[in-house]
Image (cartoon, rainbow, N blue to C red; front, side, top):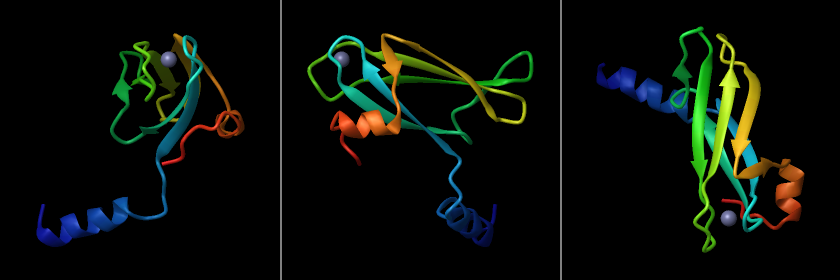
Length: 104
Ligand SMILES: [Zn+2]
């Protein structure tokens, strides 16, 4: 990849297009709310059936050892289809804000 190409891809990545998928969770042990962004370009793993999954392990900033395990499912077009969670629960962005979650 030449210099101009890498420059182009750099500005392409910095553009307004956002391929990320935000998730908000609440730890089932301590109740801390955590949010994270799934990068739809880099985090998806292709499955045998042609669909994609993304795994994410969330750990809060508080003194809690529990890891919240999140799995997101996408179809072959990388459209979100389903999600699973262990050791926590999914919450909405509004619930996250109401719980006082930090906004980076
Ligand atoms: Zn916790």
